[in-house]
Amino acid sequence: MNWLWVAIGGALGSVARYGVWRLWPSVPGGFPVPTITVNLLGSFAIGLIYIWIVARADGGDALRLFLMTGVLGGFTTYSAFALESTLLGFSPTGIAYLLITIVGCFAAAWAGRLVATALFVNG
Image 1: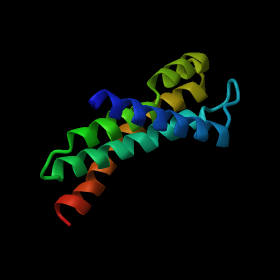
Image 2: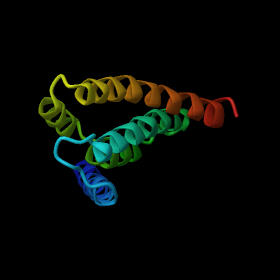
Image 3: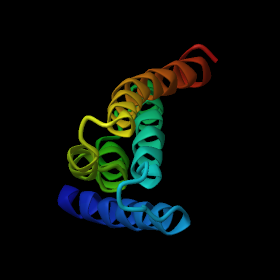
């Protein structure tokens, strides 16, 4: 049954990612706003959801699989980040994209954990 939760969550996350792309379509050679948006949001969300699930008494394995593996796995996209990085190369835009994504996603996941700790553990 776990595979079904992952599949449903993945479908929902992928549709949400497509929705972000529709709001800010990528321009070839331009800054990849849709990809960085979903990756930053997803990184914050996974930090928050992880702490929330850990703080729950029952562990929430099905919920973790649905939200983290499914929804966020479908929403975020490392492969698009990798491709867009190679297309931008070592241009100023490409280097900025690499740095913002790597540092920004780390910081977003950390911020999500801090917010969740304040809300669900210490709150």
